[in-house]
Image (cartoon, rainbow, N blue to C red; front, side, top):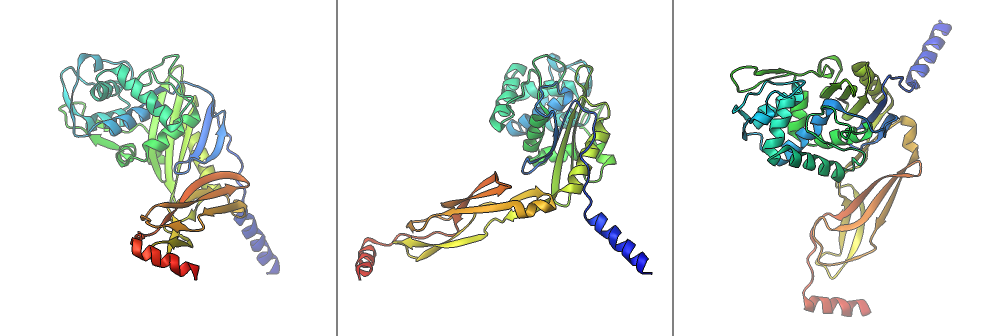
Length: 365
């Protein structure tokens, strides 16, 4: 009996202290990130510039949702008809909503939908590509260059696994993008070829799957951006040129969910200290955290977090709620991972001139 109990205890210790090995994958380039913080949880050759095939369409959708209105009605012209590769079979002079085009773009990977969206948003494809590259530069995707909105091969059309994860993270800040990405099927408001089924098996095969986008050309190989959400943590896995694309993304996300958990390190409105107010109708103001900060950590990393608060000693009225009173820096094992603001939690009015004089007199005594 004692041996059975001892065996059970040893087994529990082993389970509770399981260390999951680094993933073994087949991709030419890969990365796993936390979508919220963009913490890199695993990477392999993640800054190599490679073709991205139809994962291009993540940026196409992002630009369309930022610049357009999903209720817009789009008139399809000849340039968007008969594009090679995946298609939703647009026809010349067809009138279709931007929303239906976006579902056709993301679910069916319609190259014709990409062209129609580009021309509608920017007037022509050249200007739309300019918007794509400007957005890439804005968000820090510095090793990416677009030459078209669909991803058909061009030697100057490339990205990296890291940049693609960053683009996806930004796109997923848009609720409509997340909605489209997670949709398994869509019925468009058109007479024929109106049912779009999502090509991304992540939605069916992986617990918590969010999509996002498949891609394939002969030169790019099989490319996949996959995402899943579990227990409040959203992960993004990217593989480029990977014949085992879906399974490898699942392996990456399994690794992330098994090894990391999201921790609330700072909460919006969290009290830091009271700061004396000079010449205010209140003697002090509460300094509080401006924004919540969550970060994925391994259990043993918890004791490696250090938080530094830099707050003003006093402040002169008037003060507006939300005025910056200081900063907070968070370090993980000595490396800065976050810089945030400490703000006033309420308005403080300035005293009248007479009351200021009285306060000065009081201070002398």
